[in-house]
Length: 90
Image (cartoon, rainbow, N blue to C red; front, side):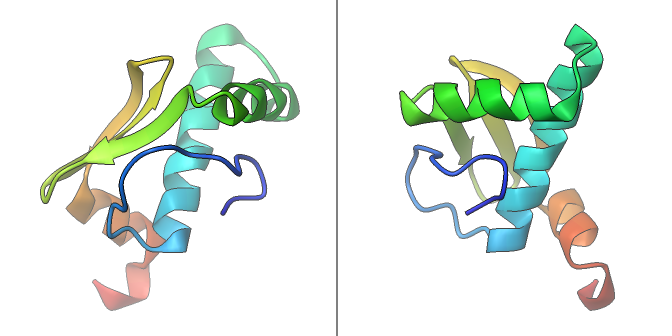
């Protein structure tokens, strides 16, 4: 799925692969900024958490969130995520 996070739990979301990658990368950046950690270290921690089922993308028709250990790290509207991932089609 992503070069950073490979195992994301949850039902099919209807997100494109690149939208999921953008969401995963945004999660890494957010955690890195909060914890003052480099992205490669955050990626390792998220990969371990995801392998144990503690990383999940959840959402509905209007918004989507990336949860880590049940806590929302990134929450955005699907429209904003689509615009970020596919700027040429919006």
